[in-house]
Image 1 (spheres, rainbow, N blue to C red):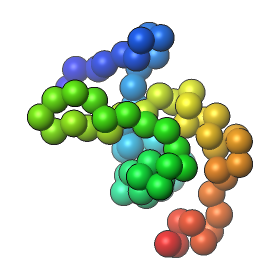
Image 2 (spheres, rainbow, N blue to C red):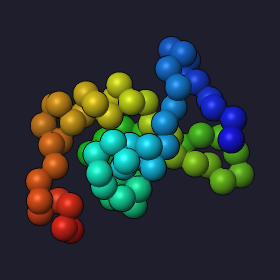
Image 3 (cartoon, one colour):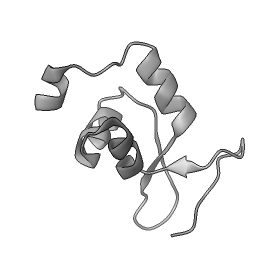
Image 4 (cartoon, rainbow, N blue to C red):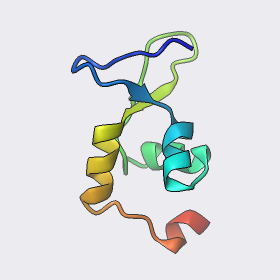
Length: 74
């Protein structure tokens, strides 16, 4: 897979990479994206994958999107 960079030069990361860091499933990360809890982008292309900037995900977590046991069980 070709790594793509944002306009700022930061590399996009996948839901799987974020999930591994937070010990969650990629499906949970994508649900948080769909719910608007973490920022992400659909990249151009046929499949239009969702990608994230790690700095934005970290900022969202630090701004009160902290996970609880109820969130993970849902």
